[in-house]
Structures are given as C-alpha cells and as structure tokens.
Length: 491
Image 1 (cartoon, rainbow, N blue to C red):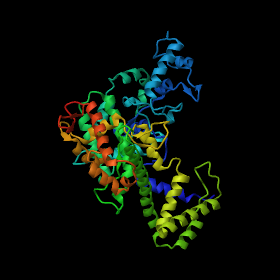
Image 2: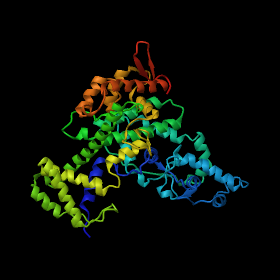
Image 3: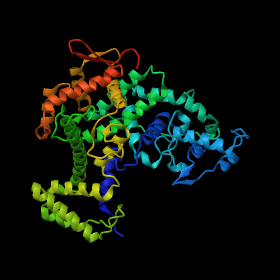
Image 4: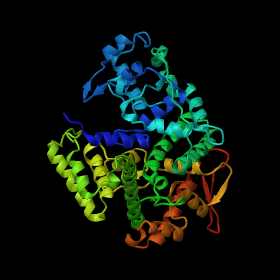
C-alpha cells in the first residue's frame, strides 16, 4: 500500500511549529499535567486516586463501592457503609475530575492537580504543548530561567492545602512509584511573540510570588499558559514572514459584556483574523518544505504531474472513503483553483496542501483549535453550548491574569497607557485609545466593515472593562474622569 504524502508533510509542519494544535480534546488540565511534570522532572502513579475519582463511564458503574471497600480496606474505616463510600467518591470526583479528564484507564487519565502526587506521565491529549511552554520558561533570559519555574515547584511540593490532605491517604499507597524523567535542553533564543510571552510569564510570577493561595496561583499560571498557546499560534506568522514589521500585531478586540453591537461584531472579525493568521503560519512552514523539494522552480503543468505521482491512499477521516485517484483529482482541482486566483504555481500548491491538511489529515483543524481551547478557559464567548459566532469576551479571571502579567507591583498607569501596553505586548484592544484603535483595526480592514459607531463604542467598551478592574481592586476612577490601574501590595 502506498503511503500518504500529506501525513509526512503534516509531521514536518508540526515538528517545525513545536506542538500539535490538532485536537479539540485538549483541556487546561492536560497542559497543566505536562507542564508540571516537566518542571518537577517527576511523574507519579495516580491509580488509587483515579479509581476513587471515576465511578461511572458511559452511564455504567466501573468501580463499585463493594470493590472499593475490599481493595482499600487499609485506608478507610471498616465500618464505613457503601453509601458513605459513594458519597465520598462523589466529592472526590467533583474535585479531581473538574475538567472531565479522568478516564477508567490511568493511561489516558489526568486529574485536577493540587500537588506533585497528582502529576502523572504523559497522556495523549497533551500534544506537545507543555514541552513548548516549558521551553519558553526554561530558556535563560538575562541569565535566568523564568521565576515561574520556582513558583510551580514550590507550590507542587507544598502538600499542606486542603485538597492535597484529602488525597493523601490514597496517594500514599502509590507513592513509591515516583519516577524521575529526563528533559532534553537546547540552547535557544526567544524573539517576537515568544519573548513577549516569556516576559508576561515572568511578570505574572513576580506579582504572584507572595500570594498565599497556591491553588489560585497554579490556576493563573495554567490559564495563562493556555492563552499564551492561543496567542502564539495565531501571531507567530508576524515573526516569520517578511510581509510584517516588528511592531505589527494581529488584533484581539476584548468585548466587555456583549451589549455593544459594533464591538461584538468587530471582536468576531478579529477572531477570524486570528484563524487566518494560523492558516498563513502553516502555509509559511509548508513553503520551507516545498522549497526543499524544488517546487518553487516548477511550472503549473510540472506541479500537476507531481500531484499525479503523489501517494494519497490513507486518510485519518473515517468519513473520507474516496479512492486514491479521487483524492488526487481533488488535490489537482484545489491547486488549479488557487492558481486561478494568484497565477503563482508555488503559492497555489502551498495553499492547496494546507487546505487538505486542515480538512483531511487533522481531526480538528488548527484554526478551530483556538475556538475550543479559548472557550474552555473563558476567553471566548458564547461559552460551551451557546449559539452564534464566537468573539473575545474574557471572564474576569482572564482579565485579572492579563493585568498581573503586564503591570509591575506598585506601578500605576492611566487606562490609556494600559491600552497601549496591551497592544504592544499581546495585540489586545479594549478601546482605551479610540482613534489609535480605529487605525489599528483599519489596517486589518475591520473598521470599514462594522455597522454603527465603532469609535464611540470602543470608548464605552474601555470604560466597562475599567469598571471590571475597579471592582476587582485593580483600579480607581477619579473625579476628573481619569482612570488609574495598578497592582498594589497584595494580589
């Protein structure tokens, strides 16, 4: 049987990117598990806690109370009734299966993590994202790795919190199964979006350093890790394409509450730009691969001949039962369609191949990946189950993490200056500088297409977001109308 050339291209592209944003099954807890394992250099067996935390699967009981009582008689009161055991298991599942990532098989299971003994070996749904994040944290900037690493280690080694104490009788059964893991380190330099992500991680760590709530601190780091992955995937093209300059940003318009239609519509459009940025990112990497194969010197007819010789037999999509000849014909038609638009055979084969990777090879296309993960962390609305087009409408905890990653403790800035820094660090627009923000949106052809008074709505949107920060204790509005934002002594 011939192999599928598209799968080889896929592996090469994903290797270049450094992780695999190709599944909507990735959850924050998967990213947490992988990142924490790499930071600790350790992994643990979670068999006992996993069995207690997973009673049902597909509406069938998989670990009965009778079995639990028999297997764990040494760590429970022998007078405990079956009802009491199941009641305890109910609460354990609420705690340790908060992300619905616990499965009957430990091989695929990931617990909510309060301390190191809930950190397990690599599971499929990590897709290399934790290793990408760890690389950013571990590289030395100004001679030092990120302070996030020490904070994560300190919190995970501290097992004095309520959740860790609840789990202790069960994790102690498997504690001898701790395993050291080796981590390959490479000398790299960060630039562009990766450097800005690292700077934000460092600032978040410094602001969270004295926070006495370890669980909140870990949650903030994990949620920012997810946000950073989304930001990297959608903005990395700015760093690797000659089309863009150093100060360019793909805008993320944060909608305060969905009450302003112009903001709502414009935010939807900026999310579409992020998806287009992802497509362009993949195409840029494919350009490198195809240049190595000399496609850039081929004519249209020569590329069509190559497609005729390209093996495409296998498909990961069960719904795609087309024959190899049919798939090859589709490939040629796509190529010809893109060629008709650009009259550039090299550009056309790159775009046709990217399209087929997204539609035929990946279980979730990467541009859809950000919608899935963004919804899970409260960055996008509507939330799960809601109808309508998604837009950037972050929960208060995301807004809090953003300000903690941007400002230094004790620093006070005007709302207008905060808006400028949001733009430079992340490409985020809240409307704090309406004229400048209109120009930024106009550069991406958004402001011209929005019905209503977008400039006026931007100013109102900024006030609404400022109100949220004020309500969280991060700002104050003075009698002259000036709003100041700051991170005071505590967080």
